[in-house]
Length: 361
Ligand SMILES: CSC[C@@H](O)[C@@H](O)C(=O)COP(=O)(O)O
Image (spheres, rainbow, N blue to C red):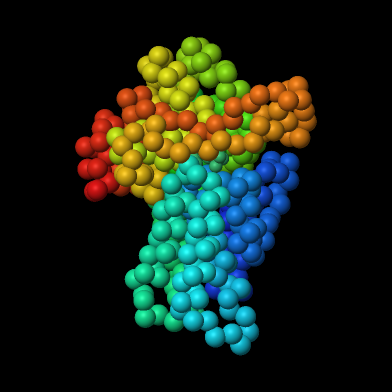
């Protein structure tokens, strides 16, 4: 099935250059779909801000961006003619890692990627600063390449579960924009479409930042996958009308028992699927699992600024001074998840024992 699927022509992130002067080119996702603009991430501050402001977003893409962010954050040490000591390098690495880790709290891929980068330094205590900088770039590139490979596996496994000749509901954006490859849940849609399963994707607009309307619809249309945009509050109605054969979403952090945090509104989709007896699938690479946590309620949920709700697109809709609660994520409890698709295999039923078995952990 995978052979017939071509990768997207756009890339959310692209490293350009060497470890000393290179930079991270990013699509600015805040201006899509009306503009396709790029940012040159040539300072760690720019990369931090891109993550914080969702110019680069989606759990796997955030991890890849942070890995390259570390390389960029160490570059100022290497001024022409400067002798960089290993102590100085390690101090700066710790500072940059801490700084990037404070950009967003929920997607565990961010912390996973930063830890992988720090581990490279720990594993090479005798290495010079210059050699280590080279190794860090190689590690960031490995994280990116592995993510692309994981997306391909997720696409194959996910497509094998999706029913044919029906509507598939998805939430938020899980495509090429959210990963280094073809996406997580989105990859399953692309594979199912390429395999001729005759699916029709219903994309939740995904309030308040509209990743579904702006990004998923853009990606689906770029790829020629039949699709229809609905508001989040229409999901129940389209299910009741019998249009939906399955729902598939991505995740930002999955606990050991299989509770899956994802964009706010995911919990509602899971509950609706349960009521309507519709399979509810979660697709995520192993880098999205946090086995140090057992339950979803322990996952740190990002709360974002009130203006995302009161001033969508910069236009004031709510009265000045309105009280706002703006959690950016919620979680679907394991009991409501039919299966979790990972690059290592499918977790079904979703239990702690099966999570550990499939992940080999
Ligand atoms: C492959 S992406 C999985 C999730 O990261 C995605 O569904 C999501 O919730 C993204 O949230 P965002 O706030 O846009 O970064």
